[in-house]
Length: 101
Image (spheres, rainbow, N blue to C red):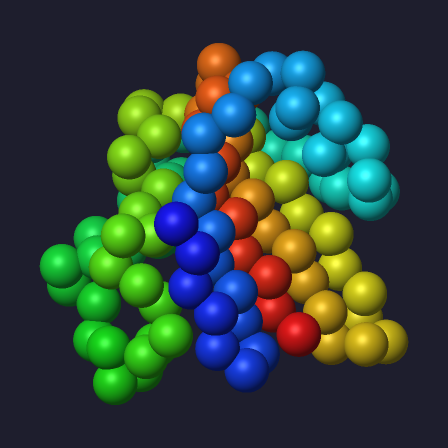
């Protein structure tokens, strides 16, 4: 699935570990393992999100679907107000990705 507005893009996709390795070599991402409680702090339950505050966040974009833990990866270009953030399942087969420009 993919959802785009003028400044943000949200994608959810399934893939394989080899393709994830290829994708993660494309930019100097930083990585962090996330526990269930860290996922809950970073991403609120989509049923509780006030769409007037985050109108572009699609309901299907839900990193809690990755389970009790995941790996986040991020890449920032501060001079250009550009960021990529992804959340990867531990088996490297599912990704929730967002890009902000």
